[in-house]
Image 1 (tube, helix red, strand yellow):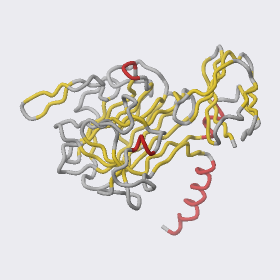
Image 2 (cartoon, helix red, strand yellow):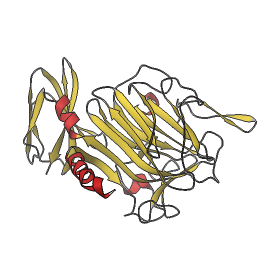
Image 3 (cartoon, rainbow, N blue to C red):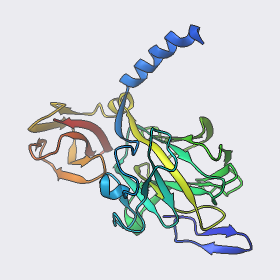
Image 4 (tube, one colour):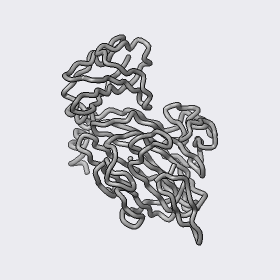
Length: 320
């Protein structure tokens, strides 16, 4: 779903629905990579290769949904073998598709959203956005990104216009898109094809410099800046978290044991509310009891959100 409301095409204006990523250096590079891997957690990743061409992504992987919560319908994206950065499949987005990957409204820590994107020069371009909050008509957008089919594009954030934050990309081949959201320090970085495009306070919205410092999802919507036949292919989608940053920001409360099996205990000062979310943003616990029965939780990664008088903090927990 778009936040911005007008897109120029030829001689007319289309009113869209409101909606306004050398040998000498080899050893040091490997060491750096090992350290980086230890400091980061893959929250979610998908290369779409375990599915069959024609599958609808929100049907075969319920970590995805559509804007109107209608998996399998016209908003749902399709698994395709037409283009792929990984061995065989990608997610194809065309006109009227509106595929959302919800995130559990993170408010602290550092997170990276990244994926490979293919935009054919024979189409009219592509579009995606990142959300502060995914809540239907009450959603709040964090950024909007438009791609022309000719290898150029632009970012809309903080009230910028289409000619202010521009970039280039290689059409007819996969390129990397990278978005870093540092929620603790309220900083954002946007890169296209391994080139930094822009930095800004993450609480900005596309049209304003005020908004939530919160990460709520990413939306692949079938739109483009110049026409009505958008087409793109998404592969190697990933959400990862900087554990070191999260742990530093959350040293005011503790959770144990971690990993947990039957019980998870939360300790700290001035805890007013405890919430537990799964990786797709579904709230599975809310209350004030600092001992949480996890026997019914499916094994996986969860996020414990603690509200205090000083704000809201989030920490990762693993249930076995």
